[in-house]
Length: 92
Image 1 (cartoon, rainbow, N blue to C red):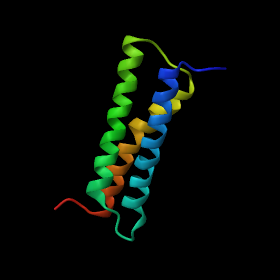
Image 2 (image 1 turned 90 degrees about the vertical axis):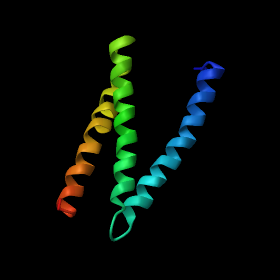
Image 3 (image 1 turned 45 degrees about the horizontal axis):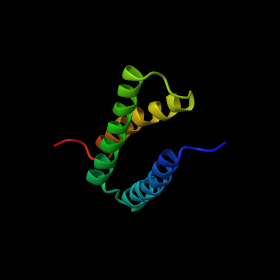
Image 4 (image 1 turned 60 degrees about the vertical axis):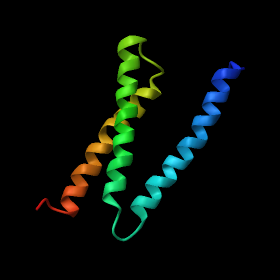
């Protein structure tokens, strides 16, 4: 199967961006005291990605079923980060 050169270029570029994004999560969460502001920022970016998927579903149609799983993660992970962050550091 051959992809359109534009799609192939875009997917390869986004792959490298996702590697950097994933390393950002690892770096922010790996220390004994996780960097909560950075984790919240990364979670916000993930939620924006999920919102973008919802816009696609509403305007273009449902993508491949695997994207349903990705959408679930993109909308649930930010909530989990916030809940765990509040458990770790109660509000003052």
